[in-house]
Structures are given as C-alpha cells and as structure tokens.
Length: 135
Image 1 (tube, rainbow, N blue to C red):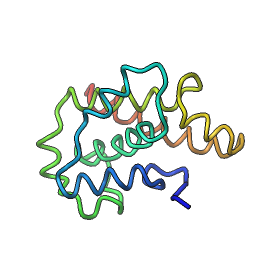
Image 2: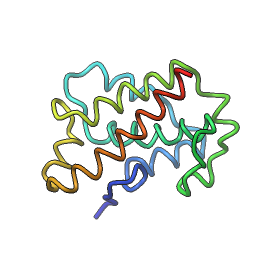
Image 3: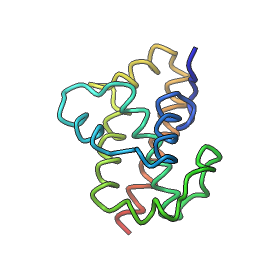
C-alpha cells in the first residue's frame, strides 16, 4: 500500500519527485504536459502540490520540510525561475479544483472532512506561493 495523507509529502508520487530532486533527474516537462490535457491525473497533481512547498522553501518563505532534508535548497533556488514557479502554481491550482482533477476526486471519495483538510492546506500553500512571486 502506498503512502496517503493530506500533507504535501504524504504520498508516493511526491516522495518520488523528492528523490528525483535529490539525484538531479527531476524535470518540469511532465507538469507542462499535464496542463495540455483536459484532465489532471493524481500523480501530477500530487507532485505539483509538493513542488509548491519546495518553491516556498527555495524562496525562503518557509523552512524546508523534513522531506527535503537531502535536497540542496540553495542550489535548487538558483535553478527555479519565474516561469517554473508559474507552471507549478498553474498545475497546483488545477489539482485542487473539483472539475478535471483526479486528486480532488480521490479526496472527495475519502470524505468531506478529509477533503476539506487536504484542500485547505493545499490552497493556503498555493496562495502563499502566489503572494511570494508577486512581491
């Protein structure tokens, strides 16, 4: 059974993305491709929400979460630019919407309380990143 929780790093797809960040193989192309379809699959939604916290840490807006202990945030902050932040935001914003997001549907199936917990935390992080890049 895979990891499943309301936190940004409490699922297998996000943890796999962190591993790819650590070994230098992570690429944003999958997120770009995800925007072209009419339906956002859960893996891309989960990764985008984790990347919101990665971006916030890279911008110095939050302390890096424990899941990022092995990620060189200073190096990562030099590799992310405004276009990357905007891409991360666009996919993450889509992930928390009821129409066309598999991740939203999965949380909806988990129950109203679980959906609200997951979505409120995700939306708060998204809004924090949006504010950080528009400052």
